[in-house]
Image 1 (cartoon, rainbow, N blue to C red):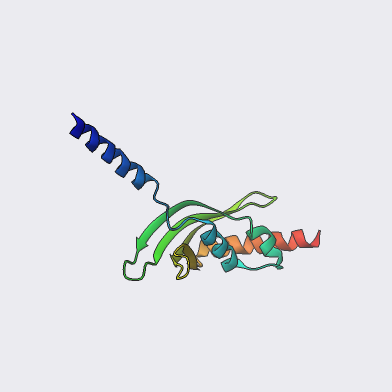
Image 2 (cartoon, rainbow, N blue to C red):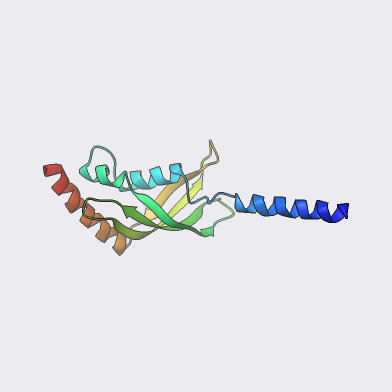
Length: 129
């Protein structure tokens, strides 16, 4: 009976460890990198884009040889007129100094370009008021 109990405890430990593994596509460093990819302070767009949220974050593919990971998410930017959102594909890789995932680049799709065009218009209106 003690053997079964030990096996059950070991099984639960493995399951809980699997559930706690972080998604390399998430994290403050990744989000900050995506924000910097769109623009930097003091642009009017930055005032809006710095509040972006990444939702529905998923790992698409990992390159085992480099450690780089292709990710997908929805980028949502809250604005006074309602949120702007678009699907976003981006790539992250491990930092040489910390090992944490850091943002590398994203792909400007038609949906992201359209979202950005709306954001520029909203930012211009906000800056003039």
